Image 1: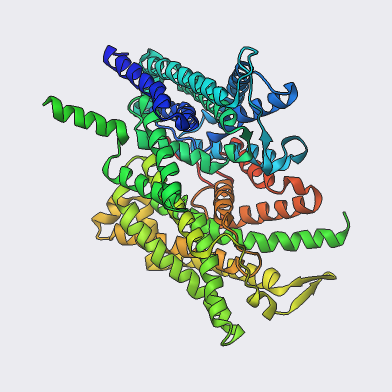
Image 2: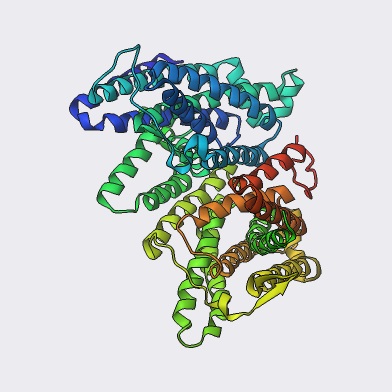
Length: 313
Length: 299
């Protein structure tokens, strides 16, 4: 990673940490943005290989329910154990599903992902006895390292934890994408056959990327479930998957930071549109998406780069 | 399981399959020609249903029999106006662009249509059962059922299947569509207007989805989420058959419709699960679908 983008990231992280002093009420919103951004990072990873998963919310759902079940079982729960379990389960789930889906490309890849996610969604919705169906499972405020916090402090703790994880995830993902393995992932998009001629198995390269993206989705799911204090089947529904792909394209898949930029714009539009213009946030987001696709296909990261180039020249 | 339940489930399944077929075949046709998976397809289904219900309620005061033409008019209106505008203004600029962007633009349309639908018709269930009650009930193997669902719906579905088959195989316009699907450049070179073909195909596909919704409107109450559920279900059917397979879609719709109906009577908690389970199993074994042809891999 280049030094300049590390500095940029540190600056952004510091800014995010500072925002909650200026506007303390925005802590939960910031947490949601960062947590969703982590899940969207997973989509960005797969987009490098040119593959779109229209079912990635399943890992988001796995993470959320991992936290919910563990929390119910332990009484209140420990944030770190939620995260560990969420990571493990989504990783294993990603590996199993990945073994099947990495054999397919393009529309087949997308559809098979969709099918798997809908199977999970209908199980969560219908196994009422275990999952409470559409009502979901409440996630109690977890402790951190055994410490209990007041509701307000608990929000802060979760925010800093999310900020930290988002920071680490961005660095690791960017390093991964810049590594030989990440370059091979990109080669799947540009020319998969050549990859085979080099003696590399594209399936294995994609599987690694798939598991990485599944884990990112799972961690995002744990954090959002804890922030919203509930896990529902909606977490794994196809519209959620569509939302992630939307955010990835909105932010731009050129840099890992795009995921967070996209998530910030998405959530801000959602919050402000539903506050000031009643019941039209979906409409507004749809229009934003169309404008981005038609006029700025490289997303916010692309716009930022274009502005930078114009300044340099 | 006694025989009455088997017959009941079979009739439920056939009626449901007929509706799902109309929607899925539209999706499949659009994919076959334009190579775009239309995520807003379920919204077209929902709009077909809502517009049909509104129109039918408006004319039912004059004569209840006018509700039948109202269903047809509603589906053509939705198909031509919404479908046509969608292809012309939104899809046309993204042909040849990345697949993600094509998919996402239809997702954007889905978000907008979903929202506008709530704004126009609200979130309260709407029901309009006039066409259903006009036709008499029939008794099949001792089981009483509405002839609207067990005769009219399958008849319309079969008519659509035969019509599409005839249109694509035996008419000049059909041959033109197939030519564009097969090789767009060569077709354009011999003077075929590929843009027009895309527009017409999309309108036909959209009208089929709207027709499915219009015909479904008397049988169920209309709810905000109906399009969201239908889109994945029609995906499941179209993918199980193999995208672009017209006849295969009919078989897959019947298969999934029956399986779902039997699940409702035996293990109701698996009703939603069944279609997706079938889809996963079929795609794992035959990713190109039951009736799809294996595509040669491009280097």
